[in-house]
Image 1 (cartoon, rainbow, N blue to C red):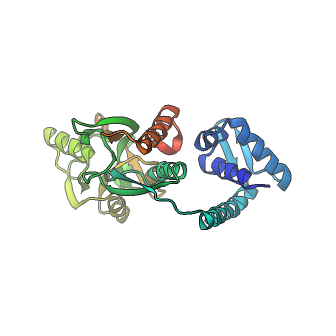
Image 2 (image 1 turned 90 degrees about the vertical axis):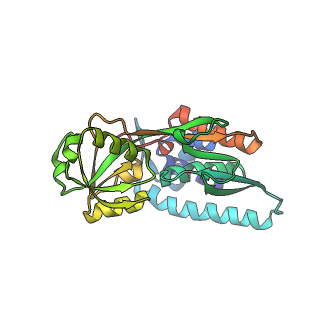
Image 3 (image 1 turned 45 degrees about the vertical axis):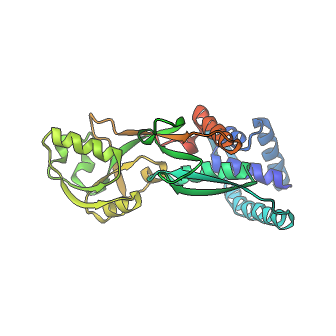
Length: 287
C-alpha cells in the first residue's frame, strides 16, 4: 500500500466514479482502476461496488476513507514542514453571493491543489481582484468569460405546506401565500415582476439576504422561499421543492476576467474541463 493508491481511492470515493476520479486527478482511468484493484487485493476486501452509473462504497471502503484522509493529510503536513517556503503568488478571486458550498469547495480545492505556489484570497465580487466567479448578468463590458455552470431556482416549502401536495405550482397559487424575500437575487426579481403583471399578491413575511437564512426560515414554517437548486439544498429531507410553472428561473455562473496570467489560465482550464465534461460535483442538481 502506498500514498498514491490512497490518493486515488479517496478521489473515487469523493467523485463517485472511476472516470470522474481520473479526470479530477488528471490521469488515465485505467491507472485509477489498477490502483484500486491492487489496494483491494492487499486489504482482501472490496472497497467499491461497480455500477453502470458509477460506484457505491462498501462498509470497508467507508472505514478506509477516514484513515486514508488522515494519512494523506499527515503526509502533506510532513512535506510542508521540510519544504522551504518560497514566496507565493497572490491571486484574488471575487465571488458573488449564493454559490453552492459543496460545488465551490470542490472547484477551489482542485485549483489550490494544482497551484501549490499560490496564495488564494476570496473577496467580494465588486472588490479589486484578478478574476471573478459571478452571474453572467454581473459581467462588465470589459470582461471576457468562461461558463462554469447553469442552475435553476425552485420554490422551497415545508413538507406540511398546502402547495406541497400540488404537482405543479402556478403564479396564481401564490396569491396570499407567505413568502420570504431574499435579495439580491435575480430569480426573485423575475418572480416579483411576473407576480405584479399577474396581479398576484403573496404575503412577504421576511426580507433577508442569505440562502442559509432563507432555508432556516422555511424550515421554521415562516413561508416559502426561492432558492437555487444546489444538490446540498435539494437533498434537505424536511423540505419539498417545486418549479413554478411557466417561469424560467435560471442563472448562468461564469468565470470573468480581463488580464491573462498563468494562474488565471490554470483556473480557466479547470472550469472549462468541468463544464465540457459535465462533472457532477460542479453542476446543479437535475431537479
